[in-house]
Length: 402
Image 1 (tube, rainbow, N blue to C red):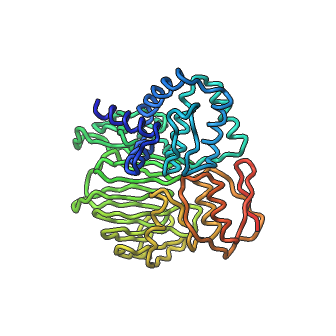
Image 2: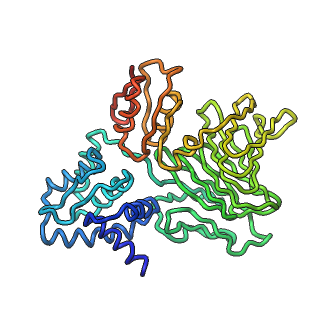
Image 3: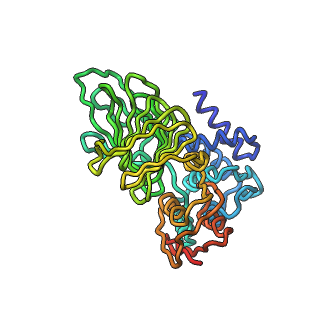
């Protein structure tokens, strides 16, 4: 009850425009954490009171929604209910604005009006950023769309409870872990435009980037904890010296006891990059059958190092740009020193768009950084500041030109 009242207070302050930076940050966390139902309920209540005193005309609703979806006026007051009641102040984060906009349009009494406004936004070629969405495949083959599931238990298999917590994370809890219970393999997959967080049965936390897949046992038994990654993930591994944690990914195996590291192992990238944030990592290259053999290379990373492996089994170490390596986890794109094609693959995965090249981008590099929650036009404008390339948007296709 106290939590509900607290959320209600945070929402009311937002609607009245009286939030401190700390409260704005808290609202940002609530939105990203999946507190959808509670937030919608509180917004509905406030909007119902406002509508009774000063109903919104259909054209005003459409205009408000168009502003929200096009995100043309970030970081200044952009939306006002009639007679300036409850001014909606643009939040410091684009993620807040986008989420509030989505929930606000859901709260309008007429579903038809909301659908019309959304169609207007789409007709303007609005391409919104990615969000928390993923699919869970259980050991019995059942598929569960996690973004459709409310907080609470999703499944219970062989003594393991699988829950979606109040922060929107997928959490595995071993309730009765006996040797007789099966150790089934589950897989969580993010699509284009998706990301997700999961807490494994041992307490290890994993952040999955877009177009990524993690396969793992429902509980860890024996003398190791082993998972398989496709794509990109950040790991915060729970320390257990008696049970090393192993990550198999695209031609390499990482072994840790407990540490923080990032792995970029997309199949369409030239190299697999492993960046160590803290602790220690032992990395071994694998053959084409994903096995260790006599030709395997071995390296031990220290914090601040990045290991690079390629399809030929070559392994090298270099100093890491730590901020760039985990920028995605912190809600940022970091482009400094990145090739154009590499940057565009990141954008394609996060915004769910196709890329078409009408110029030679080989050996061209970009600079700069920008929030991953900006409208795609703003991201592309930032890239154009380098004068290296320019862009055109046609539907969900980004055309790269000189």
